[in-house]
Amino acid sequence: MGLDARLGMDVFEAIQKRKSVRSYEPRAVPRETLEKLLEAARLSPSAKNLQPWHFVVVTDPQRRKALSRGVFARFLSKVPVVIVACGDQKMSPDWYVVDVALAGENMVLAATAEGLSTCWVGSFDEAKVKEQLKIPEHLRVVALLAVGYGKEKIGVGRRIINLVRRRKTLDEIVSWEEYGRNT
Image (cartoon, rainbow, N blue to C red; front, side):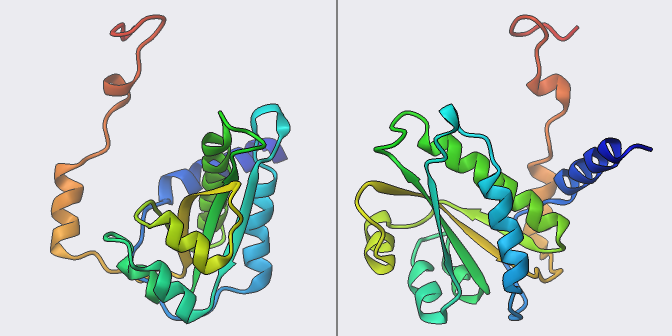
């Protein structure tokens, strides 16, 4: 099997294994590993190759606690790393959100391949995050990315949600040539 084929299988395996995790072990993530994730983000595609992103890596417990004030972000106080993904709206007013999301997904998949867990968080007060981390006005906070070693814990509530909110089939989400055509 060629190198390209093997790499493709590794990516697909990471896509299959990826899940949003909200419970983490307290152990630190090595800086070298974080740099790999950030390198994956750096290599992401972007409109006109503008690369309108900036990432703030937060490991300080007090800062992580402050980031956990969103309704669905409480668990961030117990995550070893939060990566704040920002986009430059001056540089790319129409595409910075898409570009940052692409970079974020590259980090998510790289983290999965490295044996880490992640959770994409959109529950935050942008003004407070920007003030706390001294993020300049022209940058917009797009997401907070929890990163760490996930605890294998699936409660009854999560099991029920997984049963009710199953993954849709390809036939449910794909049309061929025109909307509604499945062949």
